[in-house]
Image 1: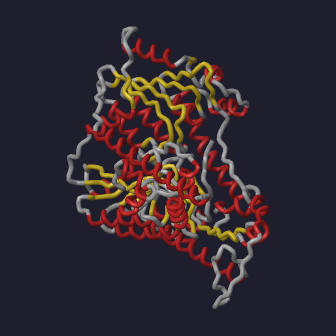
Image 2: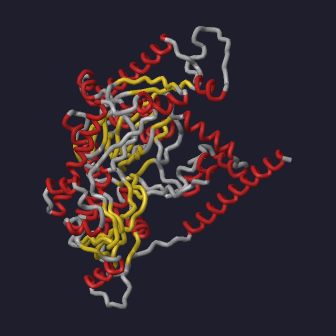
Image 3: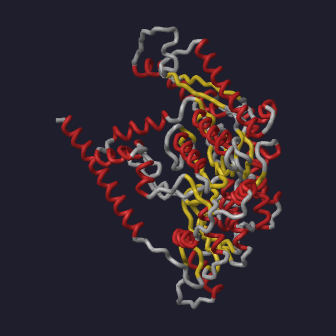
Length: 591
């Protein structure tokens, strides 16, 4: 009877999930197919009420990171994102759109690393040069959001709003104590004293080297942040630092008191002020066009006019050995894209937009190799986003020129491998024991229940050092530097874009516009249409490819969606990461 109920409820779950997906995709397809482009009315205001993460490209699939754990635990959440370059295009078009008189900015819940926030700030400053206004409003303003809000002509906060102005910090988590208690022993191999990705497994506190690079990084970011805020508010940098140190501004009234906001208003009162500014009658409703509608309108106004093409290849996310290219840099998938670009004679140049902390050493090498072949046929310029570190730098080094943002986090030229030994944990905690027979002294090498001897440990370290030597060689050849000179600035250390410029790891400071200018110069062309890769997917394609790579797998999912199938797919994604990693020291979140 228990078996019957187990099978019954498992089948019910599979049927219910499949039915939900079918309805979701069918209704989503209908709504998308029937949508109309909305043209802004006269005397309108662009409503930039933005929530969520900002990525280089917009990901419109709300279940982009749908996986076995989220499906079985019920923790499915909206993973759609705001596209940075779509946002910039909308602001740029609005400058000369006679229907748009100004921008209403509300970014309480926007999330992005510092480099992207500075890019958005520059776009807002550029919009203001048109003579049109920006009004900003927040219920709660984080430190980074203050940087954008203070570009506005007027920045108002809710009377009961919060405002965090306490400086930047990078905090790491160290798990060694927990693993010691669990009896899990990690074999850690790395090259570069600054390659601190492994420190959480082998230390209980920050190493001196990691403290040096982390301090330098956040001081660099903080310096530009305070300079930008000084420009917007005319508050001296020293005074801004003191406000942070004293925790003087932690709510809306204090933000107004210290000059970080212009006043306290409710949102309807801000709308009333905008209406008065535009000459509306009191009874008239303010004409607001949402960002989502306006960006679609802007897209409809942009048409292809040139035979020449410049391809922008978005290398965004973690690097692994998969075919996936939607928010992940799958080695197999990106190699295919680069091979296709080599054959496309209409494409005169390529901008590689890198926004990646790195990942699989094997996949990074395959992409690097294909980029060298592409570069032999047409110019390739790298534009670095928030991150272009380790494997992200590995692939960048293969291009003709590297352009970085001032606060891009790059470098991290190093390598590591982590292999757990769970034998003791399974033995002492669960009573599971192991025994084996073998045909050679090290037949169980790389087994997760193997007690490593000196020969095996030395062999793995040798393998890691060989990977580091290859990394140095690729950078030295790509940057036309001596290997010893590369090693001096490598050793796993991360650098901001402005510091990387000083040591020769990047060529110029700038954004996508500068990268496009440089690639046109190298290609000896003046005008070209832009085409983007990977090609944008429909909602259904994006959703399904997040879990399955092949068409037959998509059919299988709809017919036989079970927790076991999702779990097996998740294991495949983990395996795609590989043992050896060209990855950033850790996931950096600047608070």
